[in-house]
Each structure stands twice: as structure tokens, then as C-alpha cells.
Image (cartoon, rainbow, N blue to C red; front, side, top):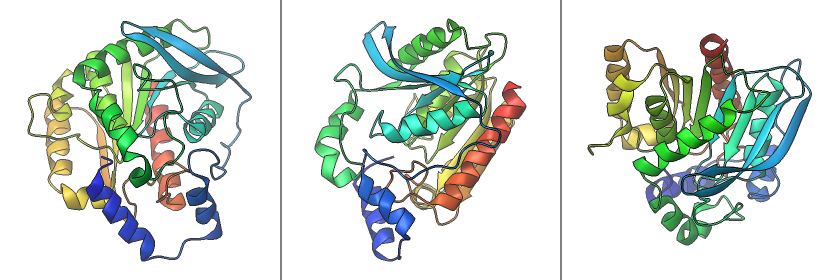
Length: 288
């Protein structure tokens, strides 16, 4: 989870390594420009649009992208703490090119439309981000999940006869678990990338929802997140095993919290690509 501890660890990590010219471009770009991601093999032509989704709590500005022909499994993307921005649109477009109808949302729509910040440097935007994050809770996540999945099911490009996937980054990791638990008949796969707060000591800890799911999962864990909470991966493994659900749970060596988005200060291209490839395998197996 984005907080002062992970920010300090990430800063220490950056100060201790030389970054490549490609990585420097990503770090310097902030939330506006991002490193170019590889195109999907046999990439499909896609259609994209900025849309609004009505929820019980308001109107969520979102980005929807899908192959230009045919029907495909729906995928709901929950962004990290920095919200809906060009990097997330780029990632959604890449997934759509692989054959999915993808909705990426602004989780902060109750407060303001995206973009909510112009930088992915947590230290620079924490005064804006923290109140926005604090306004979200387990109840709002479930309310939104139902609205967004319902919206996807109404789209002509979504094959409602096939299960959906959901994926989330940082704070979005728990959102994927609550989505899968709230809509077990619709969600067949979930992927959490450097997710925070997956295992807590609270009554509403996401890991306690595993028995309510029918989804296979990928948990791609940052090295420093694992150092801060080494028991989380074991708790997740025990929960999924007890429920009889498949879960790939791995700590990504050398990858710091936030390593997957191409506009992240700690973007790790090799490990981000490996996590992406594992997600594609999961979606192909669980949603095909």
C-alpha cells in the first residue's frame, strides 16, 4: 500500500541503483507521459472511449476499450492510489489488444473526476491522495464493483456467457478480492499487483472473503511489501487452499511496491512483463 514506509523504501532503492535511460524516461514522465509498453502478439484492432458509469453514489468517469469486432470476456481494472491516468489507459488498451473488453475506472469519482494528481511521486501528492484513499472502504468497493460489472454486462462487446476478470494495483488489490466475493457467479479470475491490505487483523480483511469466491487468482507481491508483512503470502495460500481455489502467489525479487505501471518511479520492466504474462495465462485459462 502506498504509505510513508513504502515511499521511504522505494526512495532508498532508487538512490542505490543506476537506472536505464528507458527507466529514467518513465520516472521523469510522472502521470502524463509513460514508457512505451510492448504490443500484444497478434494485437487486435481496438475501439476506445471515455465514458461515464452511473452508480448508486454518482457518476464514475471511466475508460472503456475493447476489440473492434466480436464479443469478449469483460475485465474490470482498479487503479492504484494515483487513479485513472494515461498509464492505466495504456495498460487497458494493451489488454484489449489481447482479446478482452476492458473497463478502467476512476475510484475517486465521488470526490472529483480524473486525473486527481499530476505526479506518481507519493511524497509530492500525499496530501491529496491520502484523504481520497481514506474515503473508500469495503462498502464503497462492493457497491462500485456491482455497478461496474453490471455496466460491462450490458455492453455489446462483452460476452456475458463467459466469466469476467478483475485486476488491481496497490490499493486496488483488495478491490479485486471484494469484487470476486461480491459477484462469484460473474468473476472467474482476479489479479493483484503489489496489492496492499490483502491480509489485515480487521473483521473485513479481504482474505476472509476467499470462501465466498469462485475465482482463480494471481498475487504478484513486491519484495518490500513481503519484507514488511512476510506472513501475508502464507495466510493467502492457506485461505485459497482451504477453499479449493487456484492461486499463484509469488514475491517478485527486486521489484518494489508499485513496480508494474510504466509511469511508476520504481517501474521494473522485466518483472512487470513477467507479471503481465502470468496474468494473461490466468485469464486465458479461467475465462476462456
